Length: 223
Image (cartoon, rainbow, N blue to C red; front, top):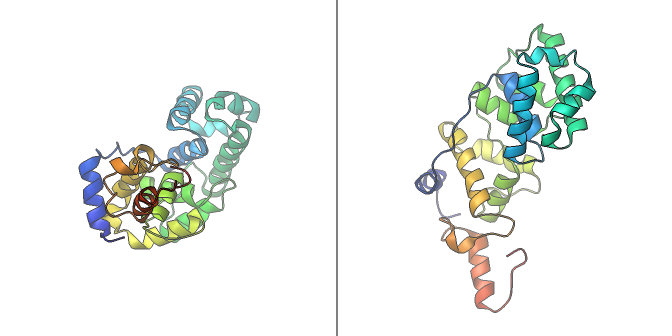
């Protein structure tokens, strides 16, 4: 990549409005992020709305039947798995800290989150960044695709790319750049990319590769 992280941020901020940055309590962010796994924002938000209508106090989920939770969060998909994870996660937090709060910081916070069953590096990083302001850079499917194409950071897995970007991106840019890169992935850098419209086409190795292969008369897979 021939532009700095700050230049990348400036280009993306000119292209997109920074999405609304939600401010939720840590356990709310945790539950919402579990609901978001392998589904769309629309389905996640519908499941979250239904869950909060039934359980304004999330602590009551601990004693609820898992079948009831499953029925409520069905719009999010994988509802059996997610219902179990949510109930077990909240139970663990309450048992360890006596309330649905996680009074930890830094690596201790991240390590605790990642040891909750069903919480992976991205989910732990989302909660740490958005609810605590901790300097992590969550990498979802969109960012993983963008990061490897430009490339921002090489890695075979999202976890490898997340670790690299956490160190590479300045702390004060982490939250907004995370959201901006997701917007880029949704609008332009799709599995079948719209490279000719992308504001990063002049800097992106993948876009240059597509241009060369199209000029040469061949077709790039996925385009």
